[in-house]
Image (cartoon, rainbow, N blue to C red):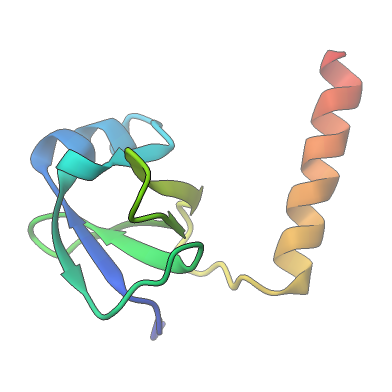
Length: 97
């Protein structure tokens, strides 16, 4: 699937953390940028070898450079995606609280 997002390449340490379930990429873990990511925009996160690891919100002024939204390369960030995420968040809170 062709993805039209700018890309962030991360260190091996960040790659291990993301594969282990961590939801963030810290600024010092970013080794390269491809394209021109905007603050608050979506970026793809890639390993040093170019393997896709996820997609998330980019913030160039925060210590947390990327906050992961999805680990599914087929996700489209459309109305259905956000509705599903909100529904899941509400259901989770009802179950836990």
